[in-house]
Length: 129
Image (cartoon, rainbow, N blue to C red; front, side, top):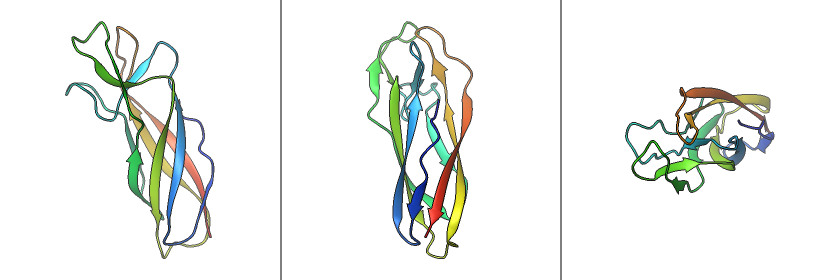
């Protein structure tokens, strides 16, 4: 579902971005970060505490699609897309390599069935200079 992200290099005190490539299998979709119905589980990305503090998670523009199980179009992501995560590097962070761990929580659905929500771990390698 998520390709391993590229290592990011950052200086203390600066803001950096990481791009996560997400792949959804053909015939499936995941609810967007702002689903059209309250009962649908949104796509969420959360990071553990570390020297890179999350400032923003930027999702692409979702598609509005109509499915058999809903009377109105739903806000979804399909195919391949990117999520951008912006971080502020702690000005007192120790220089050197590390790995920031995140969790991507999602609910996959086909055209007529939604499956149990799942979470995948994302490991973002970094180098603080």
